[in-house]
Length: 98
View 1 (cartoon, one colour):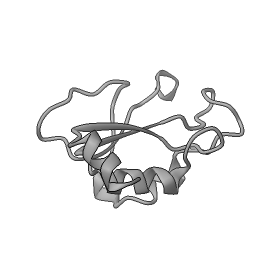
View 2: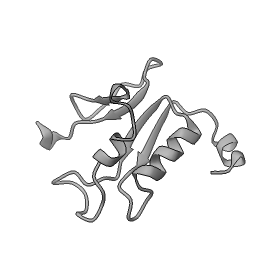
View 3: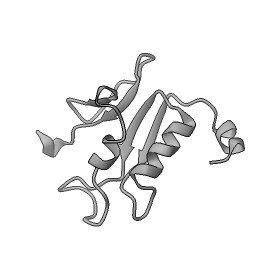
View 4: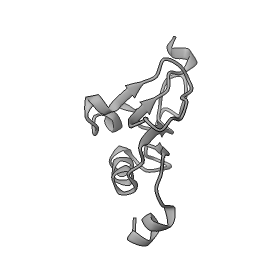
């Protein structure tokens, strides 16, 4: 990303970021984008999670391993209330995970 692009986007509270590669950016590219844009809350998307996603798409773990364990939060459900105290990576629980 260029400085002009980062400035045009401006400050972010929440960033939904594809992490599975193939058709979008991969885990490393997603982490780089997060570091450049510095959102308070990151929600990964577009990754293989059986039974969801295409089998050739990367899984979530390579992205999560790029973050400290204390910054990764696994949610109890599929949604998240956006508040001013959010900070880190938030992973929704799929209905099939229960």
